[in-house]
Length: 377
Ligand SMILES: CC(C)(COP(=O)(O)OP(=O)(O)OC[C@H]1O[C@@H](n2cnc3c(N)ncnc32)[C@H](O)[C@@H]1OP(=O)(O)O)[C@@H](O)C(=O)NCCC(=O)NCCS
Image (cartoon, rainbow, N blue to C red):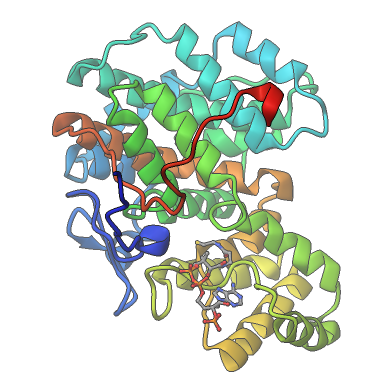
């Protein structure tokens, strides 16, 4: 007779170590984040996104000539097959941009010149192409019905081109710097749900596009990357600083979660939120978002006071992105685009030392039932 060997599952896999990685370490106890050995504060605000991607993928910050070459390669790849543009045009105007992005990335797999090749060299080429194409999809989707359609300009870097193609005009130096650093801050974060989904997918030897599609599907949820959009919706709903206290206390006393707060790993401040808070405050003076910053700051105080919980990366990223002229529907796409660097790095790491990821479940059903034909049930 079959019986169930009882195993106690770890709910949400909390604390379970599921992979080796040399990419990123999240020190949740001390609120520190390391990329390839560099603490985040060593990098944030000092390096551009291309340098961060180079660090994650190749283990070292590039020298000037490596940076120039890498940037030129990425910018040259910021173009899409015409069929993918057609797909973006076909999306219903009110479709969630994360759904369109996920669908377009899946479609890109059909047109990639390296197709089903999973060699190290093919993966390196695909990673560059995909990183550039994801940004182009997001920017193009925002202006898909506007004329003229804009292409990347070889004289600009990645973040500058991104904002140029997204907003239809070149960004100011401050805007460029803020987006660059925001992309750096979101580039990788250990085995987040989306990264685990990517690694699990690629562990079957499905290719990069499949793994990235899984990652995007996972990031979309409000408990992960979808939280930044919900933060802005909450701020809009609150609408004025003097309504913050009653709103937050009402939510908490009803057992509701405040979006943009809490983290599975950080038991103290998320170091990324510190940088975003600074940007949010700085930009609030010039971008007509002073009220939003004031409300955010008050929410932070209240949630800490009542629940002892601090903001995560998504909380201040909402007001930062608003100040950059990005509509809230696109916030999670910007996160996705930044995190593509980390996903690609994890996918390549998994490929280099792969073993199928196939855990077990604890069966809670029964045994020994007897079949009865349909007509007698
Ligand atoms: C990120 C998140 C899913 C982590 O969840 P988790 O590790 O499973 O933590 P738990 O759900 O076990 O929460 C632990 C406690 O903190 C509370 N908590 C966690 N996040 C909270 C939030 N955002 N608002 C209010 N309470 C929160 C839970 O209610 C729970 O309290 P209890 O023990 O009194 O029941 C969770 O903090 C959350 O839902 N945050 C809001 C969504 C968000 O911002 N996501 C982006 C993450 S980067």
